[in-house]
Image 1 (cartoon, rainbow, N blue to C red):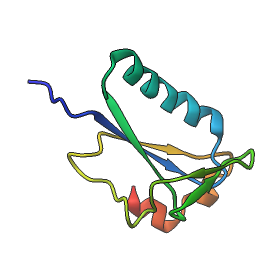
Image 2: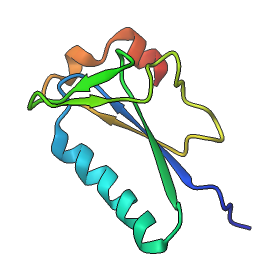
Image 3: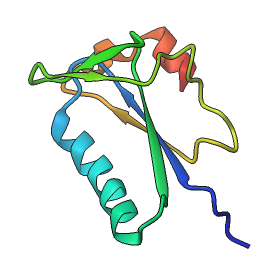
Length: 100
């Protein structure tokens, strides 16, 4: 029997992440919810600093929390998507890798 619980997406926004892939991932979820008239999907935004993430074009995005506050929860987080940029190796710090 399928669950009525929305499918949960967690987006980890690393500093200098590229906005276009993030938008391309989250907008279809929002539009599917709107078209269906119910919450098929929900999501949360996580950033290493815990309050804001800055994308490669300089736009600052508010996140729902940091790595400590929003650890992945088995049975609750269905999909984790890492949004990085051209310098992802520099942003893949020990705390980020441990969180994943």
